[in-house]
Image 1 (cartoon, rainbow, N blue to C red):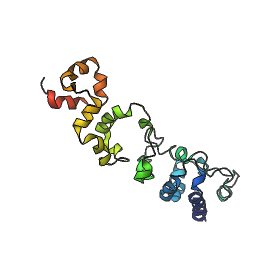
Image 2: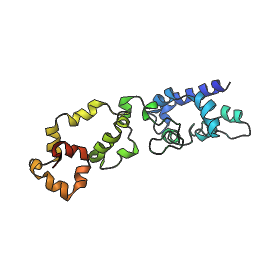
Image 3: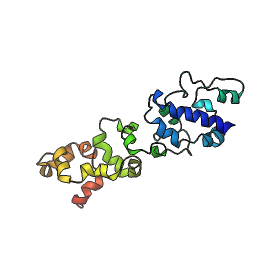
Amino acid sequence: MKSFIFMIVSSYLFICAETYADGSMLPTIMARFNHQIHEEKVLPVLGLSCSVCHNFELSDDKKSAMANPNLSTSTFRTTVKEVCHQCHNTEAAKYRAVPKSCSICHADQKAMQKIKPKNHENTAWKNTHALNAEVASGTCFNCHITSQCVKCHLRRSDIELKNHSRNFRFMHSVIARAQPQKCDSCHVQTFCVRCHMGR
């Protein structure tokens, strides 16, 4: 009976995806979401109920609440993103064993282009992403494919002209000493060592 109720609620969510703030992603996410795992294994272990995510007509009887979800406003307590990210959050997850990879639900590469993690909201992201990629490139490839990097990084001379003046090769030591943070925004120390070993 419980599985039947979840199937009905899931079907409703899938059909009415456009009514949610992030409706374009909901069908993809709901197609991958497993209510049974959450109901049988996750929620009982954490001592939580379905109402953590869903709006239900609260009553004394859990089965009654599940059978009568409050569909007049929204099936979810908040936006789908906020509900899922209560536990599945790459930045600060509440629970250690919870999968945190964005690609668990967000598998569509085109749709992923619309989503930006918190660390991408920083205005200096273009200048600082090299450090993050150097430290944890696996995280980058949850969303990005190699060809996205190659668009900018294939022809180094073009990149240098975009980010450095033509006389940069002769002047970079002065800039590096005066304002090392400018270099650090794209390069790690090992980048310098490649040419300056022992100097």
